[in-house]
Length: 294
Image (cartoon, rainbow, N blue to C red; front, side, top):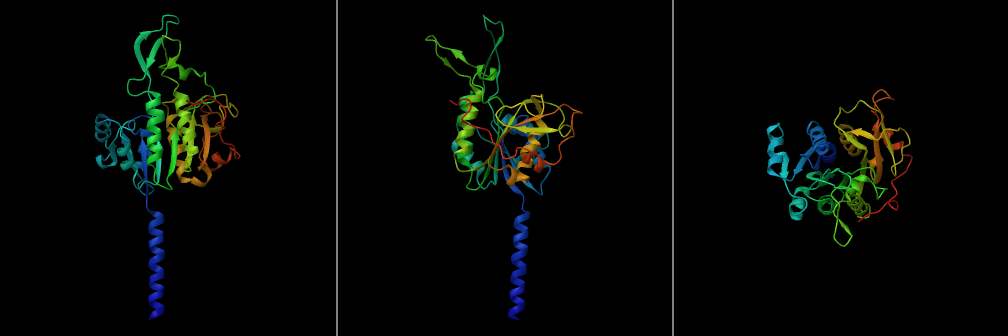
């Protein structure tokens, strides 16, 4: 009888372990109302056996748009990552991973630069400092112990003079400048994450395309190198897929920081082996001694 009881307890323990291993991972996806973040969020919603995604958006209007499109209301939370640090912490509670897809978004102010004749851009919904540094820092700090933190960032961070850093930058009467520097604020958040002791994956996509994913060969690199392809772009859907696959193949993608581009359609073979894709880096990581941060 004692042997039967012991065997029964062992079987229950195994069943419990298998059930725990099979439980879907809870993942917070910020920027879920945007384009890349929403693509990742929807990919995870379509895989309920693997993921239990929670989409974080900054406005009720963004939540309403997702719900109207068929996303369960219970899967979306509204938190301003720039100002509501406590709200971010609540949203991240119990999460196995946090995917940071928030980013400051430039738009024309309506004014024109008198010297160049080009439109002047601003950040009406949050500056790079507010969104890409403070907001990302709040999200990193909110991650539970052991959580895997992924950031969708941008290529160009090794070049302080990159044109993206000029967007929203103004010259003060004393000749100094303020605002802008989006890539430098992003890089500051990335460095903060790499020094936080948390497991991380940082993806630097090239120019983002609103074109179908899974149709191109993807190329990983570091430090804004153009090795592998002259293409500087990648579809948003492919960026989202790489972030999802980074969670599936966490051993290969943890504590890695890399650039992501895609070859033109028809050049090469569409990427399907994401473990091999990570291994193509051959141990290389982005070098944060290059470029500048704020």
